[in-house]
Amino acid sequence: MAVGRQTSRAPGHRKANPCLGRLAGGWRVALASGFLIASLIAETPGKADEFDPLAAYEEARVLNDQWQACAASFVRGKLRSRSTAEQIAEQALNRCLAQQGRLSRFLVARLGRKDGRNVMAFLGEKYRLGLVAAILELRARR
Image (cartoon, rainbow, N blue to C red; front, side):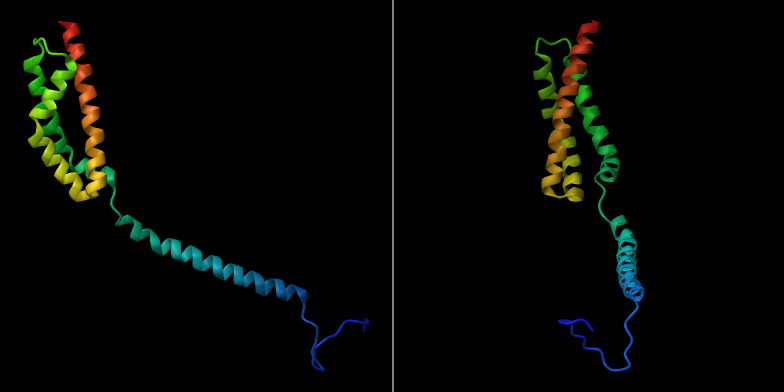
């Protein structure tokens, strides 16, 4: 034995094979990996139950279409007025608050207050800009 090295092996104990140590460590890694993969697979069905905002928007399509149809019908009657396109678009959206409210209540119920309001703010701005563009285009054609 080398000087300064102490061993605590009992008599008759053989030195462990280094490959077995690596195999034992490999099994632990494989076992841990297996548990991780199993937990991810088991978690997948739970994610399927999570809320999908795009699916809610699809369900709200009828309410959304009613809001847009209301605004478009108001704009049709105002195309020849002296009001600016921005004024007409704003008036159209204000005249259709009932339809907007139905869509808003649906989205808030499905997405929660904050997200529902954010979606409505986005849609309101998108529709306002779209109405302005449509009014300018229709006026240019006349």
